[in-house]
Image (cartoon, rainbow over all chains, first blue to last red; front, side, top):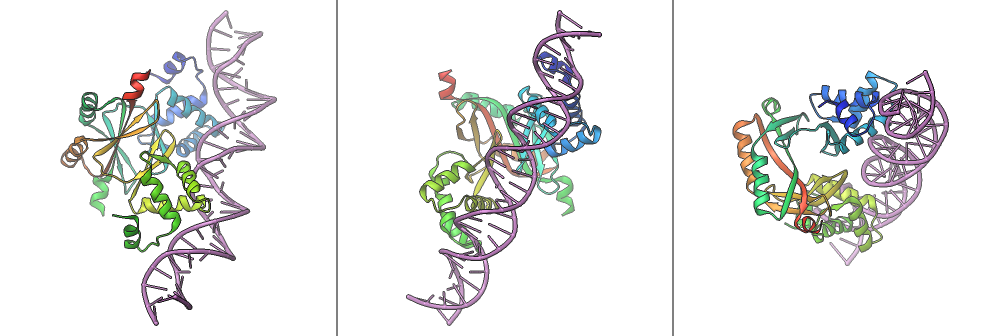
Amino acid sequence: MTLETVLRGSEHRVTKPRQLVWDVLLDAQRHLSAADIVAEVHRRDPGVNPSSVYRALTLFTELNIVRESHVGDTSMWEPAHDDAVIHLVCDHCGRTMHYDTSAVSTLRRQLQRHADFSPGSIDVRVSGRCAHCARST
Amino acid sequence: MTLETVLRGSEHRVTKPRQLVWDVLLDAQRHLSAADIVAEVHRRDPGVNPSSVYRALTLFTELNIVRESHVGDTSMWEPAHDDAVIHLVCDHCGRTMHYDTSAVSTLRRQLQRHADFSPGSIDVRVSGRCAHCARST
DNA sequence: TCGTTATTGCAATTCGTTCGCAATACTGGT
DNA sequence: ACCAGTATTGCGAACGAATTGCAATAACGA
């Protein structure tokens, strides 16, 4: 599913700022802050204004193709992905890793059966030490 | 463990703003935004300044007696509690419920065994529909 | 290619939070 | 109970990320 497909399918126009923001998100193999994205987009095309980046992120969130998460007190962005992929955030180097686990679907089933709550998306965030930082300190 | 004990134990002073912020957090049986806390503290004692509320929240976070979480794009605060208690956030009415599950400790064991990551705190947030809102729509 | 209008760039603005500093009030020692 | 020392407060100013209003621009269906 390309960005173009999603935008066309929702009656939105395919524009340079939107395309750039999307490219930056895909290229980055990590979570990016709004500031990171603004900077990288600006690097690729200085003519693109920060407000267009913010607007693109807002739109993408509504279209559910990006996911906003919070590490500490800053928002981080990444292309949306499946629930079963959870986030491991290293306290030390700040890197975020993905980890695929069945625990999420187990929890979802448990909620459906036992809690008075019908679960939509599930967000799991683990803070701790990544292998590299655990070794080096 | 009272606030006084925690503050004394960490060489911090027990002051009216801090006590008020703590009382407000304990009294509220839900998550509060910074604005909520500022408002309620002000209601109880108009002499207390918003910046003292922010400072208290920052301090309490460092002392690990409150937990900051993010619902949508606003920070929410609550007294810290055990990991096993996860958050169910209703998309419709915005209320946050607690749910106690073994899924968290299971996940922690799984991570310790199989992932190259040593887990600290685990934060699980489920968005969906609470029983009340599921019925009424 | 043209006309319509969604989207952009820009500058100004908003508003929640932080900061600097003098005044205040907690605390440990007497 | 008082005092001295200093952490903490209240206040106003400052900050900065994000938002907004608007005229100019560019995407896209016809």
